[in-house]
Length: 104
Ligand SMILES: [Cu+2]
Image 1 (cartoon, rainbow, N blue to C red):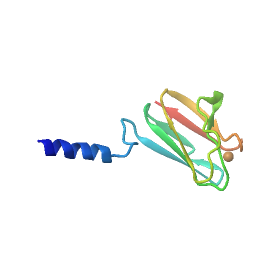
Image 2 (cartoon, helix red, strand yellow):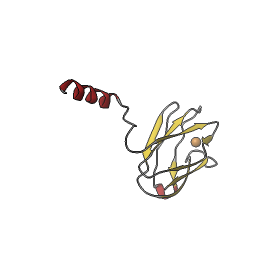
Image 3 (cartoon, rainbow, N blue to C red):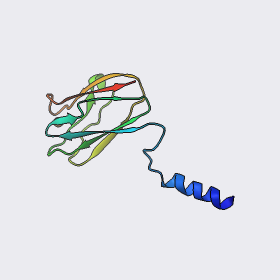
Image 4 (cartoon, rainbow, N blue to C red):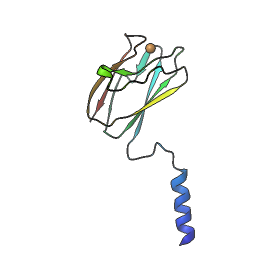
């Protein structure tokens, strides 16, 4: 019994941090675009923006509901979707870069 519970603990510790109650979604920033451009998630999910482009970018929502600040090349920024709603966001450096996050 003691061995079994120890094994269970080891398994729990080995699980990645992202394996919480919510799912993790990835938005790749590449070629001056957010991909996917529109993403729908459940409340409690986490979204990770990965900058695979050649320049820094931001993911900045209207009224700053969320704001990544500058995401360096090859860096990531994650956001926990805590509140339901539609969030249009853009890159503050490149206003033509637009995305939309919907939290259900
Ligand atoms: Cu940008």
